[in-house]
Image (tube, rainbow, N blue to C red):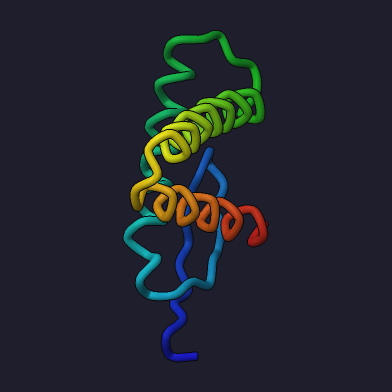
Length: 98
């Protein structure tokens, strides 16, 4: 278990405690920062009543980007397919920890 690390990430003013592999820490922290920046940008540009609305818009934005990359990966099958799978795996990890 020494390869596991306990961290706390804050997204939309909520703290999420996670137990992760050490090598995931950098990407997860960067992802949380990117989500926070996107939330701030969406709140600045749109009249949003609820954090859930902002999170839904943020999720939609990232899902659309993922779909775009998946289409690129199938049309240009170099190692980008592996990157898309890594992103999908990271999303799955995030979703199962809530």
